[in-house]
Image 1: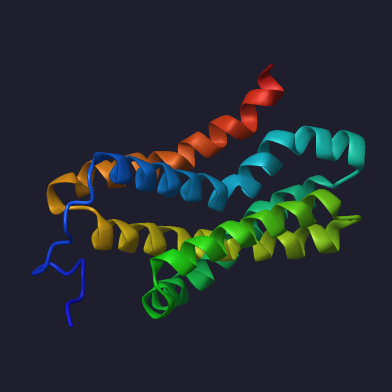
Image 2: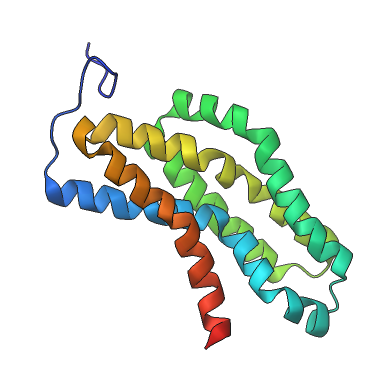
Length: 167
């Protein structure tokens, strides 16, 4: 049985359209894995002024989000190895949506911080899942470009989170 994506066995060339679609999906996954923290950062002044979130809690959102992701990242790679990149990507997008919904509905600081912690799991899954998808599906000569583009999803997420406030 052949294992696609190993160094010795390159995946078949899926075609330009398929690579573009995969690149868009992976870029989106990277953006959404971090979206909660970008939105909290962009909306921070409004959260403090209008919703009464303390500056301490606002600062803790970053600490809790990145701290959770850092603690879970080693397990994230093992999870992706176990379930595969496709399931991991679906899971990270679903968890991102749930975390964003909980953040939006949080009636107080406690649930807000729990929701942000939940959002750390998609962050922990994002690089292993997207990198493994590239390895399994993209021919070696195109992997660098696809990897660079999908990594731009992090900055794209920050741009999208802040743009409505700038307008």
